[in-house]
Amino acid sequence: MYSFKEWVFIFCIYSVIGYIWETIYCSIVERRLVNRGFMKGPFLPIYGSGVCVMIVASAPFKDHIVLGCLSGMICATVLEYITGDLMDHLFKVRYWDYSQEKFNLNGHICLGASLAWFAATFVVNRILQKPVNAILDLFSDRYLTITDAVVMGIAFIDFCISFKAAMDLRTILVKIDAAKHEMKLMQKRLDVIVALLSESAGNKYEAFTGSVSEKIGDFGEGVKNRIEYVVDNVKELGDKIMPDSGKKIIDELSGMKDKYALAIKNYTSFIHPSQKIKNFFIRNIIRSNPTITSDEYSEALEELKKQSKK
Image (cartoon, rainbow, N blue to C red; front, side, top):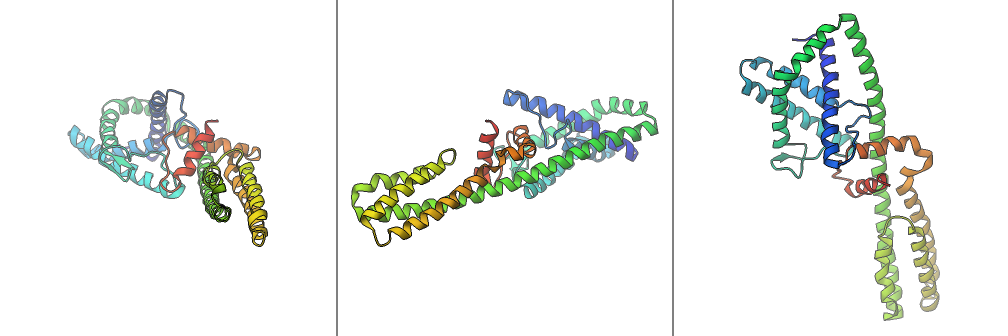
């Protein structure tokens, strides 16, 4: 077997190979260049870890190709499931999601991906590992130590930046979801107010009542103008048909407008110029993982995906 330094080198080189494979595959699928992965540099740790696990798992079955590949497949699949589940709970997003694939388990693994690990075990053990071993033989112990230290140092810095960006993305998803929840509550209250005013005025304002849900439910530019339009119209109606309670309604709507403005500010804060550097990394996460999903914040994530394309 290998020494610790050699394992580190193997982890690094297959993390790079995995990145190249993922980038080529995803770029073909997306029909554009995709800088694939959780990290920003050419490094995908899941592949480096997966290969190390496969090599160890298949080692006892060197003379049995099928058993070796099965062993590597099982261990790599378990690693993929644990990694996917941990990232889902920590970041509230799925960087890969097999929910639409047949024979999947909680969307973290599926039969197709496991078969890919089976094939990868064969390719690594029978084809790739020989040239990797030849490269290892070229390094003296000292230069191997330096190489490992430099590569892992760069990768560690990259990981820290990427981890921070992923946590920022989680925070933004929570804020957007909270802002939308607040806006939906205000929308319901507006529906009640306008329905009450329309009932007092007869059928004259039915069209206006029906337009509130559509207008307030539209998230994007001009939302503040729309709610001001509602406030102005309700003020006019209140003065005409509900003089006693009209003032209370107007006061409530004025406060609602301020809350709405705050909700919109939270909703759009991720593209604020003062957040340029942080948002660069956040947008890069979304663009580098076009199939990223979220069980808890699916609507908020879709909004971010739309904004990241602008």
